[in-house]
Length: 143
Image (cartoon, rainbow, N blue to C red; front, side, top):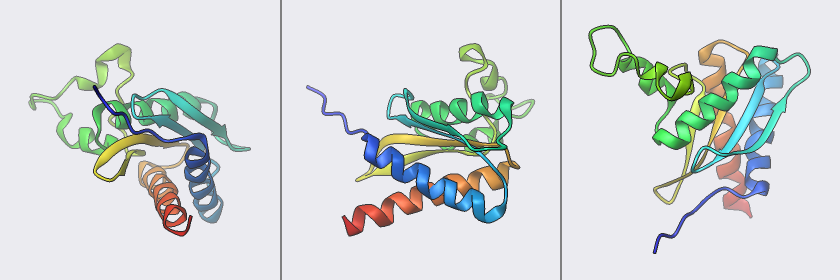
């Protein structure tokens, strides 16, 4: 029997809150997607001013981070011509993202979900995604 650990809606909301707070601080309205451990969408928000195209990108980043159990920027490093992983971004109908901004959420050594952010630069997206995770972890300790 498998025991599956996954984010609940309260935790998804905390991830959202942390990412949204950082987005406002840096002045870049983001699209924020939260998935469970399988990559299934739990929560999504397109902040006022978030790019329309970023809605799908954020969801794909979260999907990739959850399903692959690694950050999207890790794929970016190996998805270069001549490397054996080149072309992975075309798999699954192009759903696998190799753009920074998708991070798995890991608790007790297990991937329980993921966060995907899009609308800024990849570095800004990564910063906001990490801020969401940091906020969740701080709140989990105080709860």
